[in-house]
Amino acid sequence: MQIARVRGTVVSTCKEPSLRGVKFLLVQFMDEEGKPLPNYEVAADVVGAGVDEWVLVSCGSAARQVGESDKRPIDAMVVGIIDTVSVDNHILYSKKDQYR
Image 1 (cartoon, one colour):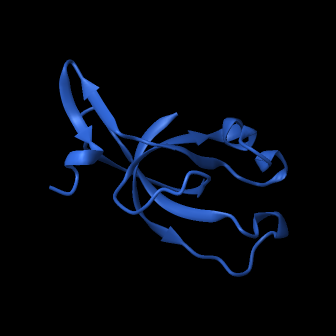
Image 2: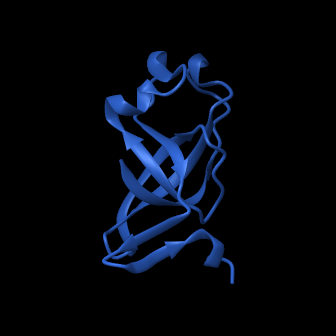
């Protein structure tokens, strides 16, 4: 899994039929200091994450092991919304402090 920040949404009206009803997010991966990396990914969302939230993203074959995704062409899946991230007893991110 990787830590990412939700940057936006992706809407596709014409797609593979098995992807109907799947919510897609544009996520940007974060480094160990909480700084954004240049890498972006389109990820399916099963947890209801919103823009600017930090999330856990599962990639590759692990992304298809969530729910009924094993038959869908999904390479990245948002599998969790992060509450806090701390490194060396320093809080890197806290959801409750995000909008203060």
